[in-house]
Length: 115
Length: 112
Image 1 (cartoon, each protein chain N blue to C red):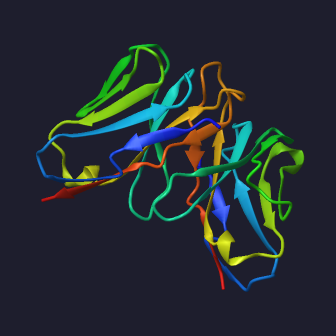
Image 2 (image 1 turned 30 degrees about the horizontal axis):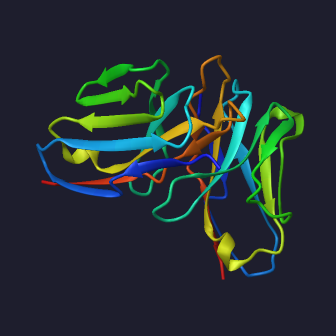
């Protein structure tokens, strides 16, 4: 168990460019979550998957955000036409679903800076 | 929509003093989780509470789930510098058991 891995750790991009982040969850976990965190705030839910199925997407997300989890393993989060307001830490977490809630295991995150 | 709130936002304590953070949900929760995030780090799971009125201890940390399952608290006895960080409570939404939403956190500073 090597934990949740996220790449890249940092990304600096110019406004209007597209960016893609990758998350590799803990191998036996069937749930994968994406959160966004800005300074001084708690993680904000973006979306989550069970295996390859995307079960819910936050209404706060615009159509510029898309996430995939092909084959139920790693996941990618793409942001199109980035805006300065997209600057944040993007956190991925995975869990193994149980009957009474499942602890989330977070990766180190990808810090996005949009200039 | 459902909200999870925490107070205080910040707490500065002298090493050895006790610390408590409170978490309140606008709706009844099926369970509540607590996480700790060290400066520059990512949230790390501490504990989950499920039953009404449940109390769990981890060394100097005591976690409590309210009788109405709408509030929770984390109490640290005799804080140490290793306790520095932000403590988040988190719980599932009313409509989606597996969608976990986080409170804004309480940032703890410990003065040696």
